[in-house]
Image (cartoon, rainbow over all chains, first blue to last red; front, side, top):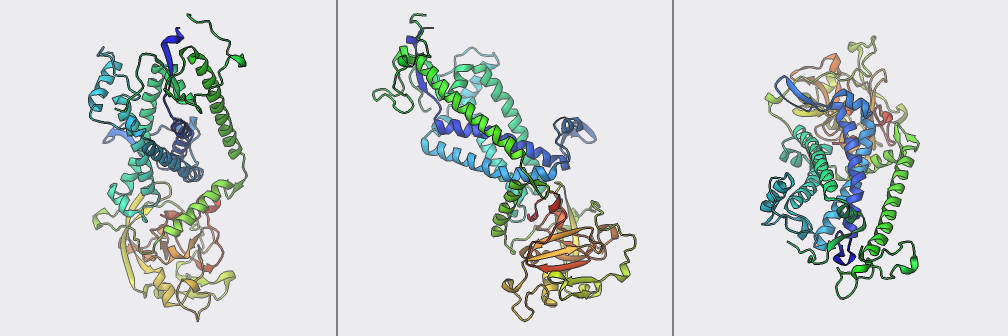
Length: 229
Length: 287
């Protein structure tokens, strides 16, 4: 490999990396404790009428992950770690806004077209080269979306945690039972995000992953530094 | 390889310039190309070591948390967190915020979800009286169901929310607890003093006649206008499985606080014991 051909570029600022990696155990604990709570009234399913295609969740899952019969414990963990999850998320959003990093992340007028190109490219349906950006259109949608989902978890969570004190909020979300369902649906959303995110990180390779730890990546010497749009 | 690899372990060859702390003034994104590999190795080593250290500390912290002693069914720090949340919740709580009410067509028959405190076969409904007392049983008084029914009747259609996660809309009727206390001058530390919070006890304890089930309430929630001494459910007299002759309905709390078959109401200034709080649940359980 010719060293002269590549250069070290700063990619992810330290606060972004810290908030990102802190969020991994925090969200994991929130989902785990949330499942301990959900077990006590596990009514959601995919199906029509009496036909159930999939029940969230089969008893064997609870057994395998020892999630059953731990409601009190689940609530206690959930209502402790909710603070840390919320604080980490709010600090991340605050930092991203103040630092200007949002310019790399928020969707803009190119985003829909570019996101489509990325999807076609990744599904090997198009050979059109992708533009060189810190985050492409698909990433902008995914990363902005998952941050909004985080906000959604806080809002729907508050609506089922204090449905009388915040009855206006619970009402806006369609009532107590709807808010609980929305809170659950967001977890399914995190799972889908997680699967795609991990697959894409593996696909993108070591240079990309390393940048999320060290902050730096190699770029071809002739490439211009990332621009904001 | 156009350039021979420098041994990364040789500290003398590693440039002193730290790209994190001292970006090169001319072009902050660019480093001298031959140094790029070495710089990356140095940066990666350092950041992966820091990340690994942080992960180890985090995981160690998690293991340490899992080893902590329990306080009423959950690790002590989680109990502290619940108590902290209680203070936050209490400071935000307002008696004027009401539980939403529903149209009659939303009413459903609630399931019977608990028999705790209702299993005494010798319980005689005809002999039942509601006992009301101060701390340590002081100043005990007894009330008949007729005396409760003589108070202004309150009827409301609210959603009972079980701590398990299900809910049901029910039409409740009874006397407001706040009316009961005001009418009979109950819950006061000094019966000659004002009938306002400074003179009211801090907590209310309710238990079934056999003491098989008991709940603790903060006074603010007890005084909420939708907190009822309930004797009718969905237009019919309360049945035994639902807590006849008199049960508590308190929409600002989870179902666990809506105690059936009240035997004694006790006022006190220390936090009363609570059946489910002893099993690891939140004592406050406020909604």
